Image 1: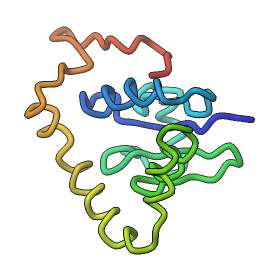
Image 2: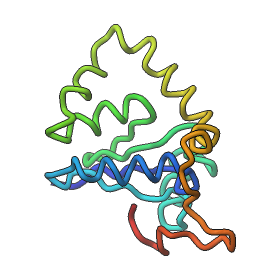
Image 3: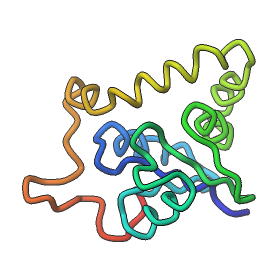
Length: 138
């Protein structure tokens, strides 16, 4: 089965650190995190969402070609990871639909400030060279 391709802000320390941590839970290799700012991924996301596709929220392309964004994408992503599946299922509970997307949006809009508070290292060095590597997945 094809992987879910998750387009994250590769310039966001919190996003990159989160993707690296979550990869450990993906025992079935069903999730592929990519930097939405790398040219090949940026074009694909921009075709669907516009030039700044991940400015406000992450995007995920499902194996069937459909897309999910933000909170609703995370519900699907977590459901695909056996150890985190209960959280993904909980996120689909209708009562959380009201508050969950709002909390997600707040975190997404403050991700750089949160990264600084958590003292997460930036994904690029002072010369602008990214540790993620050219054309690599996260």
